Image (cartoon, rainbow, N blue to C red; front, side, top):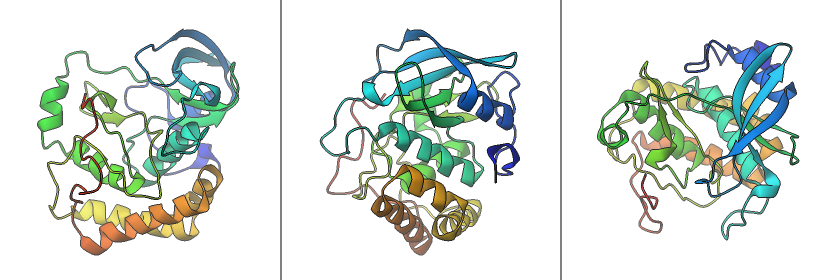
Length: 254
Protein backbone atom coordinates (compact mmCIF):
# COMPACT_ATOMS: atom_id res chain seq x y z
CA UNK A 1 0.00 0.00 0.00
CA UNK A 2 1.45 3.37 -0.95
CA UNK A 3 1.48 6.34 1.42
CA UNK A 4 -0.76 8.18 -1.04
CA UNK A 5 -3.52 5.57 -0.60
CA UNK A 6 -2.98 4.90 3.09
CA UNK A 7 -6.41 5.26 4.75
CA UNK A 8 -4.97 5.70 8.24
CA UNK A 9 -4.06 9.31 7.54
CA UNK A 10 -6.61 11.99 6.77
CA UNK A 11 -6.32 15.76 7.00
CA UNK A 12 -3.27 17.32 8.60
CA UNK A 13 -3.92 20.03 11.19
CA UNK A 14 -1.59 23.01 11.19
CA UNK A 15 0.00 22.37 7.80
CA UNK A 16 -1.31 25.26 5.68
CA UNK A 17 -3.77 23.11 3.75
CA UNK A 18 -1.48 20.22 2.80
CA UNK A 19 -3.15 16.84 2.74
CA UNK A 20 -1.33 13.71 3.85
CA UNK A 21 -0.48 12.44 0.36
CA UNK A 22 0.95 15.79 -0.73
CA UNK A 23 2.92 16.20 2.49
CA UNK A 24 4.52 12.77 2.36
CA UNK A 25 5.39 13.03 -1.33
CA UNK A 26 6.83 16.50 -0.75
CA UNK A 27 8.97 15.23 2.13
CA UNK A 28 10.22 12.21 0.18
CA UNK A 29 10.92 13.81 -3.17
CA UNK A 30 11.20 17.55 -2.64
CA UNK A 31 14.36 19.64 -2.88
CA UNK A 32 15.57 20.66 0.57
CA UNK A 33 17.05 24.12 1.11
CA UNK A 34 18.56 24.73 4.54
CA UNK A 35 17.52 28.06 6.05
CA UNK A 36 19.02 27.78 9.53
CA UNK A 37 19.75 25.64 12.55
CA UNK A 38 17.70 25.22 15.72
CA UNK A 39 20.54 25.84 18.13
CA UNK A 40 18.66 24.74 21.27
CA UNK A 41 18.39 21.17 19.95
CA UNK A 42 20.77 18.53 21.32
CA UNK A 43 21.41 17.00 17.88
CA UNK A 44 21.82 18.81 14.58
CA UNK A 45 18.34 20.06 13.70
CA UNK A 46 17.99 22.14 10.55
CA UNK A 47 15.06 24.36 9.64
CA UNK A 48 14.49 24.06 5.90
CA UNK A 49 12.25 24.86 2.98
CA UNK A 50 11.24 21.94 0.77
CA UNK A 51 9.81 22.32 -2.76
CA UNK A 52 8.33 20.00 -5.35
CA UNK A 53 6.20 20.73 -8.45
CA UNK A 54 5.22 24.20 -7.30
CA UNK A 55 4.38 23.11 -3.75
CA UNK A 56 6.51 24.42 -0.88
CA UNK A 57 6.52 23.97 2.89
CA UNK A 58 8.82 24.27 5.86
CA UNK A 59 10.37 21.17 7.39
CA UNK A 60 12.85 19.97 9.97
CA UNK A 61 15.78 17.91 8.71
CA UNK A 62 17.90 15.90 11.17
CA UNK A 63 20.87 14.26 9.44
CA UNK A 64 22.29 11.10 10.98
CA UNK A 65 25.77 12.60 10.87
CA UNK A 66 24.63 15.28 13.31
CA UNK A 67 23.50 12.84 16.00
CA UNK A 68 25.45 12.86 19.25
CA UNK A 69 26.35 9.41 20.60
CA UNK A 70 24.25 8.16 23.51
CA UNK A 71 25.26 5.53 26.05
CA UNK A 72 21.94 3.67 25.87
CA UNK A 73 21.01 3.85 22.17
CA UNK A 74 23.04 2.57 19.20
CA UNK A 75 24.87 5.27 17.23
CA UNK A 76 23.23 6.55 14.07
CA UNK A 77 19.73 5.23 14.82
CA UNK A 78 17.83 8.27 16.11
CA UNK A 79 16.51 9.42 12.73
CA UNK A 80 15.05 5.98 11.98
CA UNK A 81 13.44 5.92 15.43
CA UNK A 82 11.72 9.23 14.72
CA UNK A 83 10.28 7.82 11.51
CA UNK A 84 9.23 4.65 13.31
CA UNK A 85 7.33 6.83 15.79
CA UNK A 86 5.50 8.46 12.88
CA UNK A 87 4.57 5.05 11.51
CA UNK A 88 3.05 4.02 14.85
CA UNK A 89 1.28 7.38 15.12
CA UNK A 90 -0.17 6.94 11.63
CA UNK A 91 -1.37 3.45 12.50
CA UNK A 92 -3.25 4.74 15.54
CA UNK A 93 -5.06 7.38 13.49
CA UNK A 94 -4.38 9.91 16.26
CA UNK A 95 -2.00 12.09 14.21
CA UNK A 96 0.39 12.57 17.10
CA UNK A 97 3.60 12.79 15.06
CA UNK A 98 3.79 15.16 12.07
CA UNK A 99 4.47 13.51 8.68
CA UNK A 100 8.05 12.21 8.75
CA UNK A 101 10.24 10.31 6.30
CA UNK A 102 13.77 8.90 6.15
CA UNK A 103 15.62 10.25 3.13
CA UNK A 104 18.84 11.65 1.77
CA UNK A 105 19.45 15.37 2.19
CA UNK A 106 22.11 18.09 1.93
CA UNK A 107 24.12 16.48 4.77
CA UNK A 108 23.33 12.86 4.03
CA UNK A 109 20.59 10.50 5.17
CA UNK A 110 18.32 11.62 7.97
CA UNK A 111 14.82 12.35 9.14
CA UNK A 112 12.71 14.96 7.38
CA UNK A 113 9.55 16.12 9.18
CA UNK A 114 6.91 18.64 8.26
CA UNK A 115 7.18 21.88 10.22
CA UNK A 116 4.14 22.68 12.38
CA UNK A 117 3.09 26.23 13.27
CA UNK A 118 1.94 26.22 16.90
CA UNK A 119 -0.42 28.40 18.91
CA UNK A 120 1.70 31.33 20.22
CA UNK A 121 -0.81 31.88 23.05
CA UNK A 122 -0.61 28.32 24.40
CA UNK A 123 0.43 27.90 28.04
CA UNK A 124 2.57 24.76 28.10
CA UNK A 125 2.65 24.48 31.88
CA UNK A 126 -1.15 24.61 32.07
CA UNK A 127 -1.43 22.16 29.19
CA UNK A 128 0.90 19.64 30.83
CA UNK A 129 -1.17 19.68 34.03
CA UNK A 130 -4.46 19.34 32.16
CA UNK A 131 -6.61 16.27 31.49
CA UNK A 132 -6.79 17.06 27.78
CA UNK A 133 -8.00 13.95 25.87
CA UNK A 134 -5.38 14.56 23.17
CA UNK A 135 -2.65 14.37 25.82
CA UNK A 136 -4.16 11.17 27.17
CA UNK A 137 -3.85 9.59 23.73
CA UNK A 138 -0.27 10.84 23.59
CA UNK A 139 0.47 9.25 26.98
CA UNK A 140 -0.74 5.91 25.61
CA UNK A 141 1.26 6.38 22.43
CA UNK A 142 4.38 7.12 24.51
CA UNK A 143 3.86 3.92 26.47
CA UNK A 144 3.73 1.97 23.20
CA UNK A 145 6.87 3.51 21.70
CA UNK A 146 8.65 3.59 25.07
CA UNK A 147 9.39 7.30 24.87
CA UNK A 148 12.33 8.14 27.13
CA UNK A 149 12.03 11.91 26.72
CA UNK A 150 8.49 13.38 26.64
CA UNK A 151 9.27 16.94 27.70
CA UNK A 152 6.71 19.74 27.73
CA UNK A 153 8.69 21.46 24.99
CA UNK A 154 8.06 18.47 22.74
CA UNK A 155 4.34 19.28 22.66
CA UNK A 156 3.07 21.37 19.75
CA UNK A 157 -0.42 22.71 20.54
CA UNK A 158 -2.39 24.24 17.67
CA UNK A 159 -5.06 26.95 17.79
CA UNK A 160 -7.74 24.39 16.83
CA UNK A 161 -6.93 22.22 19.86
CA UNK A 162 -4.91 19.53 18.10
CA UNK A 163 -1.62 18.63 19.78
CA UNK A 164 1.37 17.16 17.98
CA UNK A 165 4.38 15.56 19.63
CA UNK A 166 7.93 15.74 18.29
CA UNK A 167 11.49 14.61 19.09
CA UNK A 168 11.09 10.83 19.22
CA UNK A 169 14.71 9.85 18.68
CA UNK A 170 15.01 8.06 22.03
CA UNK A 171 12.11 5.67 21.64
CA UNK A 172 11.75 1.91 21.08
CA UNK A 173 14.44 0.69 23.46
CA UNK A 174 14.12 -2.97 24.39
CA UNK A 175 14.36 -1.93 28.06
CA UNK A 176 11.52 -0.04 29.73
CA UNK A 177 12.57 3.63 29.64
CA UNK A 178 9.27 5.54 29.73
CA UNK A 179 10.04 9.03 30.99
CA UNK A 180 7.40 11.70 30.58
CA UNK A 181 5.63 14.71 32.07
CA UNK A 182 2.27 13.04 31.35
CA UNK A 183 1.68 10.83 34.38
CA UNK A 184 -1.73 12.21 35.41
CA UNK A 185 -3.52 9.06 34.18
CA UNK A 186 -1.22 6.50 35.82
CA UNK A 187 -3.21 3.50 37.00
CA UNK A 188 -6.42 4.73 35.36
CA UNK A 189 -8.39 2.36 33.10
CA UNK A 190 -7.66 2.80 29.41
CA UNK A 191 -10.48 4.41 27.42
CA UNK A 192 -12.44 2.05 25.17
CA UNK A 193 -11.21 3.93 22.10
CA UNK A 194 -7.61 3.31 23.17
CA UNK A 195 -8.24 -0.39 23.76
CA UNK A 196 -9.62 -0.71 20.23
CA UNK A 197 -6.60 1.14 18.81
CA UNK A 198 -4.17 -1.02 20.79
CA UNK A 199 -5.86 -4.20 19.58
CA UNK A 200 -5.42 -3.00 16.02
CA UNK A 201 -1.76 -2.14 16.69
CA UNK A 202 -1.14 -5.60 18.09
CA UNK A 203 -2.41 -7.19 14.88
CA UNK A 204 -0.61 -4.68 12.66
CA UNK A 205 2.75 -5.20 14.36
CA UNK A 206 2.42 -8.97 14.44
CA UNK A 207 1.40 -9.56 10.85
CA UNK A 208 0.54 -6.31 9.09
CA UNK A 209 2.05 -3.35 7.31
CA UNK A 210 3.18 -1.64 10.51
CA UNK A 211 5.25 -4.62 11.60
CA UNK A 212 6.93 -4.82 8.21
CA UNK A 213 7.70 -1.11 8.25
CA UNK A 214 9.06 -1.17 11.80
CA UNK A 215 11.37 -4.05 10.92
CA UNK A 216 12.87 -1.80 8.23
CA UNK A 217 13.59 0.94 10.77
CA UNK A 218 14.36 -0.92 14.02
CA UNK A 219 16.01 -4.14 15.14
CA UNK A 220 13.87 -7.24 15.39
CA UNK A 221 14.18 -7.35 19.23
CA UNK A 222 12.99 -3.72 19.36
CA UNK A 223 9.97 -4.51 17.22
CA UNK A 224 9.17 -7.54 19.38
CA UNK A 225 9.50 -5.41 22.52
CA UNK A 226 7.07 -2.88 21.04
CA UNK A 227 4.57 -5.66 20.37
CA UNK A 228 5.00 -6.93 23.93
CA UNK A 229 4.33 -3.44 25.33
CA UNK A 230 1.09 -3.27 23.38
CA UNK A 231 0.11 -6.71 24.69
CA UNK A 232 0.95 -5.61 28.24
CA UNK A 233 -1.27 -2.55 27.96
CA UNK A 234 -4.12 -4.69 26.67
CA UNK A 235 -3.58 -7.24 29.42
CA UNK A 236 -3.50 -4.75 32.31
CA UNK A 237 -6.11 -2.43 30.81
CA UNK A 238 -4.61 0.57 32.61
CA UNK A 239 -2.18 3.39 32.01
CA UNK A 240 1.29 2.33 33.22
CA UNK A 241 2.83 3.45 36.47
CA UNK A 242 6.30 5.04 36.63
CA UNK A 243 9.13 2.55 36.94
CA UNK A 244 11.17 2.23 40.11
CA UNK A 245 14.27 1.56 37.99
CA UNK A 246 14.23 4.59 35.70
CA UNK A 247 13.67 8.34 36.29
CA UNK A 248 9.98 9.05 35.76
CA UNK A 249 10.31 12.63 34.49
CA UNK A 250 12.85 13.96 31.94
CA UNK A 251 15.18 16.80 32.85
CA UNK A 252 14.56 19.57 32.19
CA UNK A 253 10.82 18.80 32.11
CA UNK A 254 10.13 21.62 29.63
